[in-house]
Amino acid sequence: MATAQVFGNYELMDLLGRGGMGEVWRARHQMLDRRVAIKLVRPDAFGVTGAAHVQTLLRRFEREAKATSKLESPHTIQLFDYGVTEDGTFYYAMELLQGLNFRQLVDEYGPVGANRAIHLVRQVCESLEEAHHQGLIHRDVKPANAYLCKLGLKHDFVKVLDFGLVKPVPGNVAEASQLTTEGMAPGSPAFLAPEIVSGQVDERTDIYSLGCVAYWLLCGRLVFEGATPYEIVVGHLERTPEPPSHRTELPIPEALEQLVLDCLEKDPAKRPQTMKAVAKRLAGCPIERPWDEENAAEWWERHRPAPPPEGVPVREVTPPPALVVSPELSGARAKTVDALKAHFVSSHIDVAEFERRSKLATRAERPGELEKLLLDLPSPPQELVVADAPAVLVPKGHTESQRMVTVMGPGERTGLWRVPAELNVVNVMGETTLDLRKAKLGPGCSVIRCRCVMGAVKVIIPPDLYVEVEGWGFMGAFPTYYGPAEPPTGEESWIRVTGWVVMGEIKVLPEP
Figure 1 (cartoon, rainbow, N blue to C red):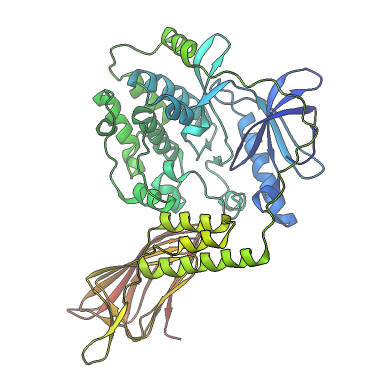
Figure 2 (cartoon, rainbow, N blue to C red):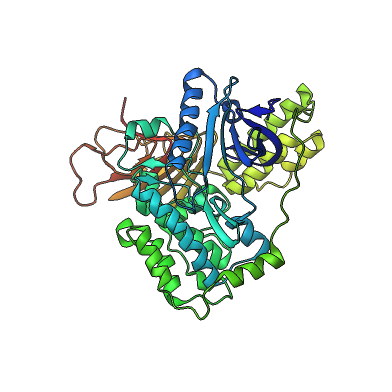
């Protein structure tokens, strides 16, 4: 992190890790000679420029520091100090822990037994119960933010980390929205409660995420998996979770499994309503042998990670030299990515494959590597053929349900085209235009179902077409609209636009 060595009273020693929220260093208090962990956040590391945006980011992390400092549960990370340096770097000092987080625990050692899962999750409940009692919601409860450590003579002691997304309850909605910087989603997709997309967040949001964490501990799998974050979010919004006992060979008591599934209810009203209620049900789960200090000490004796070595105070961190790319290669990379975008839209290559090839294209060092990325793509289908009179352009293989995908570019259906009974519009950072003025509609209702992430969908309607628009958006616009004509009767054609949008916009425009 730049060339700075001292932050306030703290001297940096060695880098412990990097994450989406900044860097964490081992450091030493110069006067007390106490080892601490220092979290550093530089606005330019997030691509944030401009005084207003920088101040928003710094206020966000100041909010995290203040919120964490108010919490006194032994299972919440302890914060000692925070500040801002002259170069705009925000830092705060917290207790230095030795251990591993829940994600690392399962990745390295596999799922844990039901007795240990209960022991660990109850400690998370204690931390979050106090936060909720003080009117704070964590909003980013996930395995990486639950840290398992040895503290004093206690083993398997859990600390909840990173209250950087905390929200006051009840809170100032305007202030909360301003303190969520542009492009930073509130929470992690794999542990995202459905209601967070619509902005209706309360204590039960953390309960849903805690259910996802318990699920991870018990079977080592995410509740919903997918090739992209979009697919995972759709799972949380629309799919029913598979019981964890179906995805592991380890025994899971019925009462524990039912509790996890209750926490994962889509409707917050059907979940346990408080962390205290979750902890009480955990304590009441029948298990043959509860996990105790003896079990934990034995596990740590056999498996505990070696503590990181003491480092030398850092004098200067020099970044590795950047790879020099010729203008010709840079241009070829850009053309290849553009070709992949165009082919993705026409051929419906899945998002994961598109992202994989695009990343390879941006890292290619020789033209031959770029050529290989375009060799084995599926042939684009013949999209349009001329039908019998009246002359209408009809998509080849037309069915009652179709899918239209737009990713990082424009996508449109204009002129003469046939609208299916259901058109599923997927938009990821793109611009989709559906012009219905000359479109051929079937009898009754045709549904346009939108799933839009950081993009825009525009629907242009003729003056005599009845349209119903009703969906929901998070940090985006999905207005409710009815009209402009009278509600249809019988077999008269009409359109319903529904779905959801995240950090984007759905527009329904009458004919200009």
